[in-house]
Length: 390
Image (cartoon, rainbow, N blue to C red; front, side):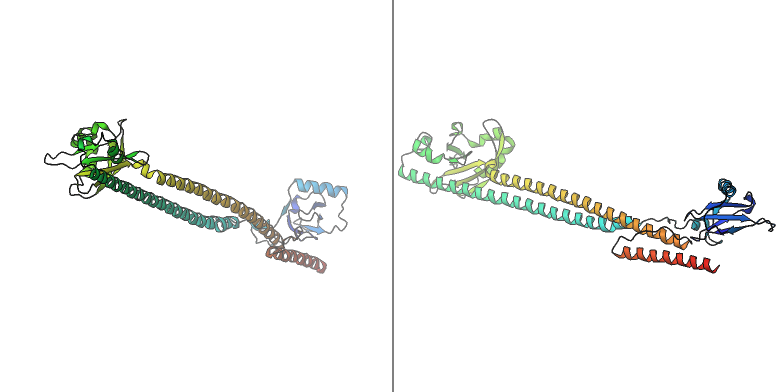
C-alpha cells in the first residue's frame, strides 16, 4: 500500500503484512511530520490505511510499534508515480558527462586565451631577440669597418711621412732605416694598443721580399718567405696580403700571426706603397682590438634580452596562475549554485516541497533562484489544496 505525507506530499510504500499490532507510526524523512498507519481487520489482504495524526502524537504502544516497523524496514520511499524508476525516486541525480561547466570554463577562459597569449608573447620575444641579434651583428660589422678604415688612414699617413723624410734625406740607405732614430720613429708607429706599422721593400731582380723597419729586430733584412716554416698553415693568408702590392696598389685583409708567446691570433693589415719608391708601409693590429667595442655592445644586448625573456616568461606564468585561480573559483561557485538549484528543482518535481533557501545573487542566477523558490511555494500550495479537497 502507498501512504502520502499530509504536509509535504512525500509518498511511501508500506507492507501491511509486516505491521505488528493495530497501528504503526513513523516520521516523514522530508518534513519530519508524524505519520500514523492503521491496519484494518476487514480487509482480507491486511491492507493498511493512513490515519491522520493532527496532534503529531500516538500512544506508547503505537510508538513501540513504529520503532518495530522502522527497525524491520517496512517503511520505504516510493517514487512519485509507480512507473517511475528507482533512480528518479531520490529526485535529482547527476548524469555522467565528459565535460562539466567548470571544465568548459577552464578551457574557454583559461587554456584558450592563455595559449594565445603565450604564443603571441613568445613570438614577440623571438622577434625582439632576432632584432637585437641583428643589430648587434650589424653594429659589430660597422665598428669593424670603421676600425679598418682607421688603420688604412694610419697606413696612408705613415707612408706619406716616410716619403717626405726620404726626399729630405736622399743619402739615407735602406740598411740604415732601423738605426736612424728619426726615420724609425716615423716608419714604426703604434696602432691602437696592440698594433704597429712596419716598412718593407718590394723585390728587385733577386725576387726577395725584405723588411727594413720593424718592431721585431729579428725580422730586419731577412727573406720574408722564410716565415713559412714558422707560420705554417697561417702563412698563406699573411703572404697573400703582404705581396698584394706588386702592382703598386693597396692591399688589405685578415690573417693569423704568431705572437712572442707562440700563440696564434687573428690580425688585420693594410699595406700602402710609398709613391715613387719600392717601399711599402704595413699597418697591422689584432682583431680583438677591432671588435672589442662591438663585443661589449653585443654582450650588453645579450644580457638585456636575457632579462627581457625572464621578465616576459615570469609575467606569462603569473598571469596564467592568477587568471586560472580566478576562473577556478568563479566556475566552482557558479557550478555549485547551478547544482543546488537543479537539486531543488528535482525535489519539487519529485513531489517534495524541499527545504527553503535564500536568494543571494543579483544576476541571472538570482532570477533562477527566485523562479525555483516560486515553483516550490506553488507546489506546497497545490499539495495543501489537494489535501483540502480530499
